[in-house]
Length: 282
Image (cartoon, rainbow, N blue to C red):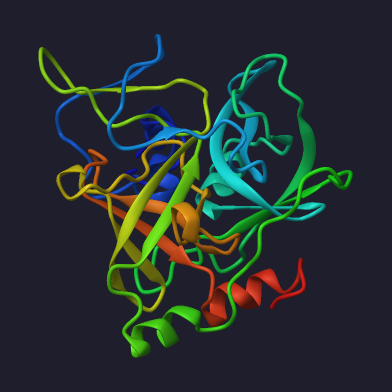
């Protein structure tokens, strides 16, 4: 898996165009493709299978009427509340789509179980880099009682960790349905897409007012996110030390999905101001 505005696939970024002023100003100038063919080996992550049952895919008929396709990723944080990114929901709203579904199947197919819901884009969603408000929820029509929701961080958790010196070397676990890292050589880069849920481990890179930046440099042993992972969780910890706490949402990063996962913090006052209308905060 791996980003850009790590939302949808690049074709939807082109469709976003005027609404968001483009997906990211460092998008590649050369053409590239999303490869919809068979699964290929990867080095940055592994198939999640049933490892994170509360992580789901956001589904809508955004390509062709009557055809349901994955758009973004997200997480169940309460029986009826699915957390994702506002640039995902705002995109659908911009093209007149209001019907949206969520699947928690580790492999999305035409037979996947779908849960219908209503999108709530953050009214403060904007293009201000200091805090874009890129957080949204989908309120499901019916509660999901057979999946344990993920937890949210306490207020200012990462500021406190930074002050204590415990962020350096901290691992995070990214989960999502996005494409894999690019295949480069013999033509334009291609990004294999498998419709599967993947998991990868990143290491802390930097902390900003709204952003938690994570390394996804394979040379240092890190994985990360890419197109279609937007809205998906970055859990605090990894391996035996992984927690059920979502530290941040995957939002953006470098266009080739090889260096940095730029994620939206959930412990800030602005994120919590939005979330408190939908869930009880820790």
